[in-house]
Each structure stands twice: as structure tokens, then as C-alpha cells.
Image 1 (tube, rainbow, N blue to C red):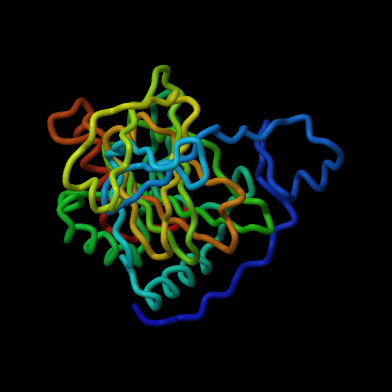
Image 2 (tube, one colour; image 1 turned 45 degrees about the horizontal axis):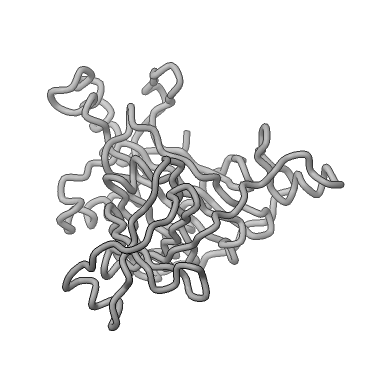
Length: 302
């Protein structure tokens, strides 16, 4: 990939918000006190450390120095170079961006899906974009992604002038498989993870010498915190690749808060097929068709 300059897009004067979701554009247009409510912040904030796989209580919080294991998050820093990043975003900006919820814009490369009815159509789907061929090849160099074959790519554009964000959510598990893979471009941000399950999380007092000491062993739990009151902040450096699996994929909702978008951010998320569409699954033939289309790398945004 050759180096290329990246020009910030003009701030849109229209938005794609529906229902209770809002952005700065529609909030200004409506004026007055909004009748909707933004999700309240969780009571207790923990910070995820990728070198240990633990979430640790934030400084000056009630749980400072306390920690719990947070499996299912893999972070690969500097996955692409600055030159590759610039060219990828330039190529994205040559294609139309569609208005989306909460101040985002999007480009979809994948089948048209009705998740509620569990139906999909391949008409019009021509594959992932050509510039993703090298990205997918490079993913396979890492053990956690050596057999990762994406069938869908969604590009999201965040901008502080639009108040861009995305609410806490879990990705579909009927069509999309075990691993969610996201490439974070143009600026760093924070992925905020929360869980609405009842019960408590058992905490350990982080030993002196953290974070290295947590790799050596685990101390007996001696404190707990209600799961519903916890938010885990996962720092995402610019040009990093994030992989969510296991509990982080299926049990903890993920979000990007408005306050964590300080400059333009572009995210490319890649999804693989679920077991139902893989060899041996009930819809394996459709899955094979989707993969053949996807990995032809001839796509345009749907």
C-alpha cells in the first residue's frame, strides 16, 4: 500500500438517528431538554491491561488496586503502518458513506440480513473491498486468527462534531461466529464493556509490582462487586487490531461513548460465519457461497 493523505470529511448537516438514539446534529435541531435519556455511566470503572489480561480498578476509585481476570480480549498493536492506514481511509472515502445511528456513518460489505427473521440475501453482494485482501492475509499470521475467514466487513466513521457513539450491544450470534475483529484507524479510543447479568465479580488485591506480578500467580479473592455496576475500559491505540472471543464476545456488551471520540475515527469490523453456516452445519452450502463471494475481494458498499 502506498502512502496517501487523508482529508477529514465535511460534517454532515443531517443524521440517521431513529427512535431514542441521538447525535449532536439532531439534538441541536430539536432544541430544549431532550425527552430521551443517555445511558447512565456505570458506578465502578476498571481498566483492561492487555499484557496481563486483567481488569484493574481505576485510580482514585473505590476499587483502586483491585482486579479480576478479563478473558477473551486480544489486542495487536501497530497492525498496519501509517502509510497503509492513510491509503485505506482514502480508498474508503472514495466510496459513499451512508448515514447511521448516533452520529455514525457506515459502509457495509456483506449480505443483506434480517436478523429478527433470520433470513439473508446474497443479491448485490460482491465481496470484501479489494484493499482488505492484504489485511485478511496478515490476520492469518497470528495464531488466534490463522483460520479466520471473514464473510462481512462493516466500516464505521466516527466524528466528534457529530457526537458519534455506539450504544452497548452484543453482536448477533445466529449468522456471525466466535470472533469479532476490528481495526481501529486514525485516532485512539476506548471500548467500554459492561454486563447486565446478576451476581458479583470476585476481586483480587493486585500485588505490588503490577502488572507483571499478575502474570506469576493469582491471590485468593477477598472482595466482590456487583457485575451490573462495572464497566471495563479497553484502550484501543491507533492502528491496533482487536479480537473479541468467548465471554468478551457473547456476555459482555461493548460500546464507544461519545466522550471517547476526540478526533475522526474509522473502524473496520470483520465477522466470520457461525457454526450453522460452516462445514457440517445446517446451512453449510449457503455459507460456502458467502465465503466464495466475500473472499473474491471485488466488493462495493451495499
